[in-house]
Amino acid sequence: MTAPATRTVLLVDDSRFFRTATERALAKAGYAVVTAADGEEALTVAREKIPSLILLDMLLPKLDGASVLHRLKADPKTQKIPVLVLTSLSQRNEEKLVKDGAAAFLEKDQLTKDPQPLLQAIARVLR
Image (cartoon, rainbow, N blue to C red; front, side, top):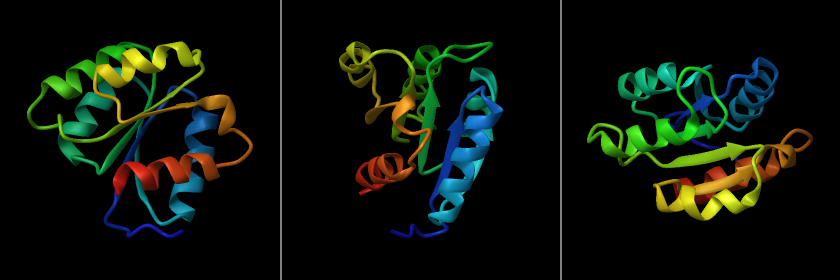
């Protein structure tokens, strides 16, 4: 399952290990990847790069993921970018996140060993 290189994914996570591993998996699948390590950087990069998709962790320094999601969806320049939420928080938050504009929700612990669920979710969201 190869994605066109024109598809850029913004990966927002404060864990360098998770960013590196996920970035490798996405690049191998054919995506161009840009990263941000905190919520403020995520907003700046999203406005500058206008990615095809944003992978957003919820527990971030400077500005949490829920606030980032809210600001992305309130900004006319970024509101149409699909946001796939990655979190260690329980699934009970899924309904609220989707209501707030998230396109999909994945628990991070599902992704650490196998990138396939993430790649499949990205493909579904970008369809």
